[in-house]
Every structure is written in C-alpha cells, then in structure tokens.
View 1 (tube, helix red, strand yellow):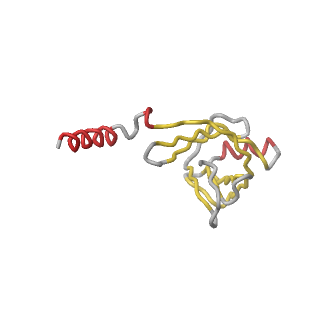
View 2 (tube, rainbow, N blue to C red):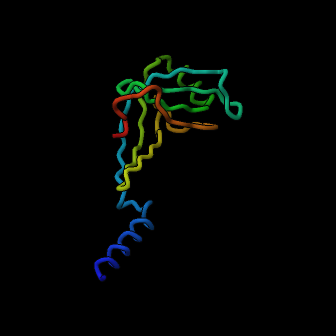
View 3 (spheres, rainbow, N blue to C red):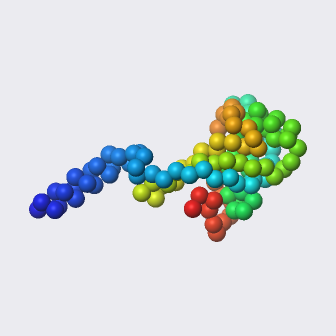
Length: 126
C-alpha cells in the first residue's frame, strides 16, 4: 500500500507542476520562411501575413499585423529568417513563440496562429 501512496503523491506533484520549468525543455531555433500578405483577410483592422516553413512544407504561421507587413515589404525579399522559441514538456506538449522575424523583434499582432495544410510528414517543432 505504501508504494501505491508514493505513486499517487508523485503523480499529484507532476500534475501540479505541469508548468514547472524543470519539466520543460526550451530551445531557440532559426527557420527560413516564405511570406505572403492577404489584405482581404483582417482581424481588428490588421491584415494577415502568412508564413510557410521552407524546410517543412505545409507548416504555417499566420500573424494579423500591419506593422510586420510594412517591415517585410520594406525588406524586399520573400524568404526571411525567423527565430522561434520552442518549449517541449514531459507530457509531450509543444508550444512556441516567434521572437524575431526578418530582424524585427517587436510588433503589434491582433491575432496569431499556427497550423498545417495537407498532411506534412515532418514538423519544425520535433
């Protein structure tokens, strides 16, 4: 019975500490992305810019941000580098945060999302 009690205590601690940093692994990676603007698609007055991972076709990130669009258009190239912070936890959950896009480290975004098109074979977050 004592072993069963210890297991339940350990399980309880793991569930309480689901967000604890010692249960997470965070790394920063650079990715090449291709971007495209859709001025017809808006959120809170901001146009959509969608990025596709060059090395992971079918994986996309979208940002509703006129600030980001102006920066990208001024940059003049459709393929850019993004820095993404990726966190994996012991429960198999993955989260990410885009911390730099084409040299820009801060921008207003009304909404952001990530997703896939089709059935991509590999993920940029593995």
